[in-house]
Length: 231
Length: 366
Image: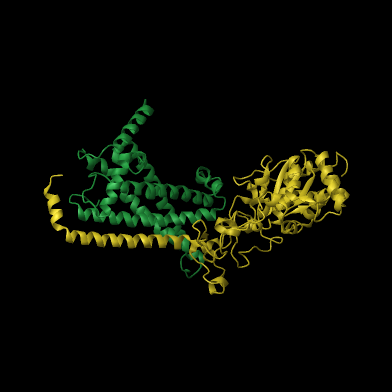
């Protein structure tokens, strides 16, 4: 059955993620292409969301002229919401790809925290970043430390941002909109949406912090390691 | 207390109101509740035929602004009609009876209209020290509330006190003031938040409940959807300035005089569910934003504990320091940025000093 096949597949993928690193990976470039495409669409969406989100939080300098002749804040919010949709749909496709793609595609969603070997590899990476060792544990895909950061700072935060973002969007779209029906439960947890705005705004800074570390680590890896590609 | 078959209509007529006035009241109420054109006659019919539904109005820790608002309902008919309905039973602020006589009314209603009266609660009970911070009729208010709630049909939580806790529940909340739904969990509770709620909202809801004998449709937070399903922002007459990106920067700048959006001045309209921008106040005269001041968000949970009323980004207290999201975020990003820069510097130094090592590694097949 399809359901069983999927479960089987998922189990195998999880096992592959947990498995010891291997040098032999066939067709990495091909299986990675959709992930790379997603990565850059996602990065563009995040850049747009961060910039517009910050402006939405602080407000623009006053526009001159009549209100009827201006729609600046409206356009900024439109850009924010559109980029939000792009990011959300991309994120859903990414989850789908994690389920049907290679084990590497699963890494940002599945962190085997309960495995000893996982922590050994994390320890190794910490030593590497502390300049105590040179050789990376894994040659393919993100290392274990990167995987941890991805999962806790990126995957979790983006999920939080998508959920709170749509909940806040649902307030504007009205209580009978699908956004409110699907995400309105956020306001059962936090009745005053002022708090949701605040936490959504803090999420921006988690993403900014993550991006800083992420870009640095990638550039560093690229300059230290022959054969690693920035893309 | 009157006979068991007494209707609202007979009470209203006894107050000297004409049949014409009665029908005006019914149509006005139907319109303010947003009901269809036929609703006026069904309200009239219900008020004429259904037995009168007693309302008990209790006061806990509160400032009586809900009562003050209520008796200023725009249309005098509504005020007269509802006050005659309600004051007949129990409201210690405006009823004639006092002392033991007043307390006897509670017991009588409780016994006579078991499960058929509405309990309206203004204010909330303090729970610390056994409820000793609010004594009503010689007993802690929380006991009175529990005993009256037990036999009631439904409960109206008037105002932000009863709905969310309000200023008496502000941190550190020494009296342990708690909203009604923290104390009464087995009865339907309708929250009518606002400090105070709008008079027409209050009178409209009382009429709805007494007419139809049930609570109106409530939203996720337990508020009546008919008045709390849209934010101040959604019907704000300054919304076009918001969309245009025209904001007031200072209270006395030219943009304030032009009536631009108060978003940057900390207006909580975008996060506040209430009917102010639609119904307005004092008989539809104005509402805070129209008067040039941002919305406080007085009908929202915790509005009293969110720092300044004049900040767009409110402070986050969970960190133990009073900073807003931008300050916390920028500090974190700054620290991480410096760490990254330092790490990059060390990496560069290491690469310069360990060139031979790297060459050795490269020669190994890996």
